Image (cartoon, rainbow, N blue to C red; front, side, top):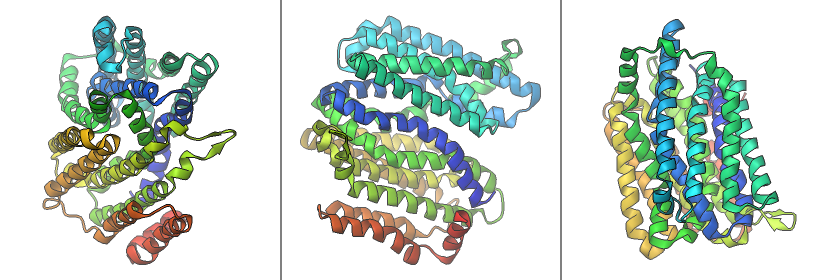
Length: 472
C-alpha cells in the first residue's frame, strides 16, 4: 500500500466519520442562540452521558465486528456477524431497561436536573444507536463507501432537521433536542435493518464463537472507558465543581476545537488499515515517517489557523445574528486549548504502528489510563482556581502525557526515523499563537507563513516528493 492509498482511504471513510462528528458542530450556532449557557450545559451533560454509555453498550463488539467481518469468509463470516449482532441486541435491551427503570434515581446525577422522562428518552436513543452502528460498520468492512457515507449523511441531515423542527419551530427546548435525536436514530435504525437481515441467522450461533468473540472484545472496554474519560470527564467535573453554566461555556469552546479531532479521526480511518498492511513490507518505517510529517503538518496548520481566527469565526455574521451566540464568546480561549490537545492526540495516533507491529496492544488501555488519570487530577487541581480554562489546559496535558507514554514504550522496540523538526515545527507556531495579540495583519502573516516555511524549510526532499505525488 502507498501513501496515496492511505490518503484515499482516509478521505473516503474519514469523510463518513467526519459527517457524524460535524453534526454537533453544525448544531452549535442553533444551540448557542436558543439556549443560555446553563441550558446548553444540561444538553452537553446529556451528550456526555450518551458518549460514556455507548462504550458500555458496545463493549468492544464494534471492533470485533470489524475484525471478524474482514478476516472470515462464507458461512463462518455469517456465524460471527450473527453472534456479534445477537449479543448486541440482547445486551442493549438489558442496558436500556436498566436505564429506564432507574430513571428517577439517576436523572439529577446524569443531567444536573430532575427530569426522569429525559432519561427514558436517552435510553431509547442509546438502544437504537447501538443497533444501527453495526450494520453501517459492515458496509465499511465490505468496502462500500457510497452506502457508508450515505448512512452517515442521513444521520446528520435528519438530526439537524429534527433539531430545527423540535427546538426552533416547536420551541420545545432541551426536550426537543432529545426528541430530535430519538427521531433521527429511529430513521437510521429502520434503514439499516435490510443490511443486517441479509447477513444474520441466529440459528448459526455456536457457544465456541461466543467465547472467541467475548475474549477478543472485552479488553477493548477499559480502553474505551478511559478514552471517554479523556473526552468527557471535564463536563461532569465542571458541573460538580462549578455548575452547568461553566459546562455550557466549556462545551461551546470544545465544539469549535473539535475541528482538530475531526482531522485526527478522519486520518485514522485510513491510517489503521494502512499501517497494519504496510507494516509487514520493506520500507514501511520510512513511509510511516513521511506520513507523520505530512499529517502533523496539516493538523498543525488547522490548529494554528483556527486558533488565530476564533474571534472572527465566533462573530461571523449570519443575517442579524452571529455564528455563535454572544453569551458564549468568552469561551474562545478554550478553543485553542482543545485544538492543542488534539494535536497531541494526533502524535499519539501516528505512533501506534510500533504497538501493533510488536503485538503489545494490551498497553493501549494503559496509555489511555495515564491520560485519563492526568486529566482528572489536573481538573480537580485547576478548576477551583481557573475555572473553564483550567479544565481546558488539563485536557492538553492529558493528551501530552498519553502521547509521551506511547513514545517511551514503542521507540526502543520499533524505532521510526521521524523528521523530528517537522514534529516540533507546529508546536513552535502554537507557542507563537499563544502570545499573538489581536492585530489582523500579524495574524494573517502567521497564517500564511506556516505552510510556506513548512514546505520550504521543514520537510525534506523525500517528504516533498511524497507530497507532490499525492497532490498530483
